Length: 589
Image (cartoon, rainbow, N blue to C red):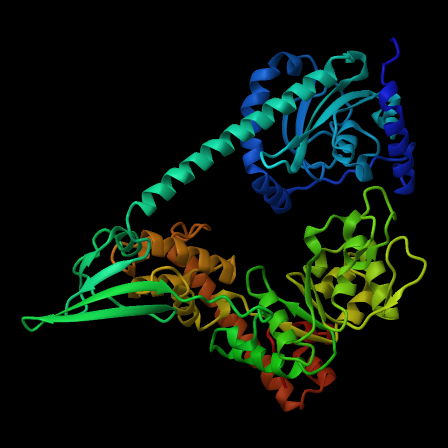
């Protein structure tokens, strides 16, 4: 086969090879295969739903012939993860690495068109030996970046085939496809903006943009403007008006012929906290059940210490609320509170994100350098959310900082002393993660000074109290719950916890017609209606067994004055198991 004319890209490919070698990749070694599946993949697909939707029809129309001839076209997100695919490589029994969920960034797959297009932000063509890994030399690929209507880099499109099918026009074809996708995105965005403009005109044409009601002497609604009808329902006339806190109400009364009329103007109270005091406090922790009251007591005491704290809890239970409350209740409250979502930062960026970097430390680095999160939190608190998802490599770097209390920026010759309190949170059992080899044992004990366990919503006895609080923060000041709705809220299993509850209430308040949320207004995403009564009964039995176990453990612990060894012997379980159950059930001495 004749040589491929890629002289203008030789330097870029050489630079890519050097980066791959710096990553520690070996060209003759096995190819890494970072593959997202299950929930992790669904999250990425959901985040890129708009791009996938606008791309799918273009690919199906433009490339049916290419795909039937052994070409494959994929769309990747900004991180190099394949989110859409059309066609299949004709490679016999060889594995098809280009599957949805697989990552083709340089750090994972070495030099390749996708990784280079992401890095260089320009159309790239890689052929045969240009690929870093020998096992990828059978490929010929062309990729081009994709930009959003606002100019933000959002991903790339790539066409691949066996090297025998090389065509010099592949790079032109992929560039045209990228431009077609961007045009489609721009057109959709423009249409959406036009619709928003029309809706804004319609709203401002209503003369009054806030709800206005007229009430009789019994506080029944006798008139309502269009904004109020949207808020309270088209059939709100005749309903009694119930005001709730969270709104200021201006009332002008007029008595004519012994008749009282009230005009009510509703303005949502500005709940924005004063500048500089935007963090949550203990008073923001709503609930009166025993487990929540216990959490508040622990926070009040733990806030005054400097011990690290691990906050355990399922997704949506309010772990960051607890972390902020620990900070604001303690002596560091006037200092920075820095939160880091460890699961949202790519592995290759975690060290620069946490510890910062010097100017010129790597290609694309800020000329003046950038401080990391630990430096930013100096004197205050750093909150490492989803710590259980941190890679082992990042765990090693974090351990070094916690041991030495010194941060060294990437590219720096010396470190800086730091003074931070470390709070972490996870929905995983870190003790089990240690035994599974996914979490460093030495780091676990560095972080495990104290622990706080948040109960899932299904185990709380104050769901209605919490619901009333969440309703008061919505746009309808007089919304209330029917008895049927209360029963459903109590019996639902709440896999999404408080976050899901708030979402359900927002939707229910929108659909309700008479300011009273009925059972039919509650729409549960996880299929409440499909749950049989027997399933609810089984859940109640399960909860009963849990309560029995808690009572037994508490009784034994008190009988031996919290001697863990004696208690474990009586209960016929190991000390570690007993510690885990004390942690799980938030038992206190």
